[in-house]
Image (cartoon, rainbow, N blue to C red; front, side):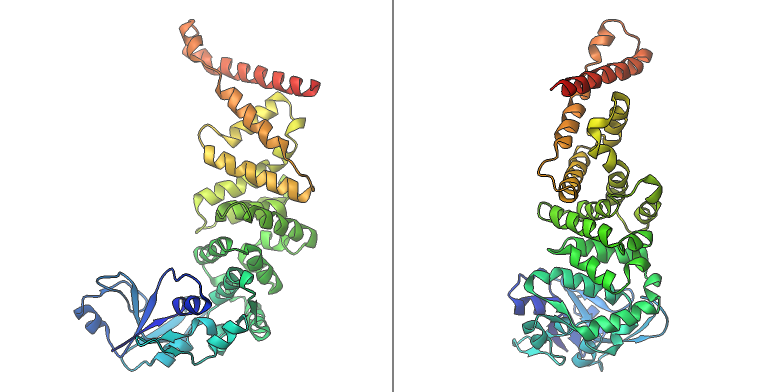
Length: 387
């Protein structure tokens, strides 16, 4: 029984980056032996075990053989006769196909260290084509390591382009797609993920109509600019996603945004992301043009923004709108945000308790509150017109 540190931990250590989690591969053992040593099995599709003290993952060395289409079409073989080299051969990129022995030796049968020095993302073998999810993983790695100067090898780009042509990307579950996409959105250079998939003509297959919209150069440039600007001020994947799609649809109107609603309701996208994405596309034009709204329309907008019940989402939306507008309209300020915050605060300051004390019936309060809010907003609009 031999144990090796593998994958991302070895890669990040060689790059001088913090190692956030460590994965291990066990050679020459069996599930029965691992269980007898106190490890707890957690892998359902292949034998993965948790260390009884550290909780780190230990996987039996294994091979994988394609037996069907899509991400799940694999037959896994794990036994004591599977070698470390066999296990490393099944991995996606050479920089992820290295191992470190307990004595500190680096096992690198596929040139991972050379590719690290060359800042190159290169596939290990032609078996790469057996798993279409690897297209998204490589695009995510390209985004993650873009600031370190990494590029995808030409031969790997060509291989992935041929994979896109098979249509197998469409067979990946939306849960897996969003897992990779949100992971990419949390990297330092999330735009690289989308540009890479666009170059591969893969966005249409995973994002539908939104992916098609990305093929329009002016819309794509707007979206990437908005994403770049928002990424400098927040690392929230949902805010970044909404800024990207908001920028993509900046010059579109309601009748052109049905693809966003379809995308937002796919399984795997967290509900908070769905709400933010749909509200961004729905409300951005009203917020950009808020100074042209009458009192009734302004009150409807404030209700949709719903600062009182969703204050954090309200701040996120105003940040998204600010970035999109200033980036794409080449403006240095977004006074609409201050105006909306002030208006929202003022309408919530109306105290209905005094009305009830004065004898106003509870059934009349809602109508009276509506009238008072409209009067207040109209006064604000009139005062601004005179200033």
